[in-house]
Length: 527
Image (cartoon, rainbow, N blue to C red; front, top):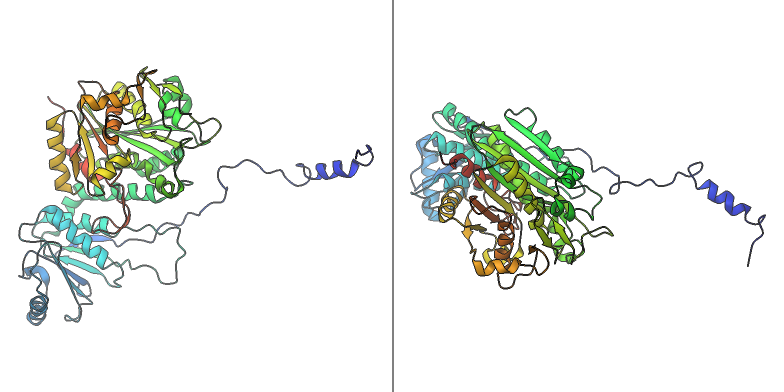
């Protein structure tokens, strides 16, 4: 039924009422437009150093056997009670053992933590982390005794910081705050212990906390631009630091079709972030991290079951920036450049398609077979950029790259790939010492055939005849000069802890900071 012009007037009036002159039209916003707030996580315990334990503190005794250390500060009767409890329990101070006691004198609690007779620095850090986990609900100050040297006291302080981490800023809190009474690390030369901690472990603790916080944040909060903002905030006031950021327009001018291409389906623009810390002269060590702030898989979309974890797909980028933060905070005598290749991989009418061919900064072309193999794409442009702009003496890239690495090694090891046996040996030694282990997997000419494309220089997916992790490594290798010392770390299995361990509470582990920090302090360009 048609309407006369006169009969349409009420409808026109209604339409006018819904215009900006009446009810305001909805304006496009990013996300919901509703802030989650600015409240921080509940405060952690402050960790300090002293030559004796406060009388009201819960006492943590690090044990290398059954003999109580001289600085335990227990009376003869209290020591006898502890010795009797050890005998009854069969506690011998072996590594990873513990015994919790109450009713020992006026102490609210005495916790014995064993490290064994052949304890390493990592064992002392782990003991302190164990104490942090066990005492997180203790409503009393904490003191740790039984630390044989100032350096080991510093390691214990690091262990406590790592073990007590929590991220609860988005939880509704009750009336009673989480315990935050201070921790005292006891050593006869407290000043030396404090100096040792300030010179190194304090930076590592801050770097790991920075990484864990970034990964814990929702993907609506951390995206390429906000990742850059958090980085600028973390480095504010530090000396010998330069921060450079390329937006999409700058990357297009440079021909970075791989990095820009991954993010072209998202309304949030991609970024290349480069943090340079110059604490020494000479060529830098380049650390390059995959920074997919959320990975839906793009048009090759992931299943719903696995997608919730994909806010952590920027763990490699977080690790390299956290490492630079650790080194800069402690004024380490090193020269490093940390590169974060940041993008959000989303399905959209403008998203990359399987079958597309893209061109990278260096001119090589890539056939897109699977848009969910995006991490290697952003790394391709990033490693070429840092090689050209900074001429590093070596490149290390780190990424949550493949499920294959997780399937092969589980959560205990990151996969290491390198063309150089000496580099592999260097990584093995450092990784074992700091407690972030790696396991070398193979690069092989036959496996390199997995990334050959019939229409482009390389393709980004299709494993045959290579295992998936090796295929990913060979793809990145295609963008690394043959004479460039290089290592690739696939950290997919180590980025997250499903259950708590002494140094890694359940959640994001912050893997990579301890490893790369130690590596950077030791690895220098050949003179």
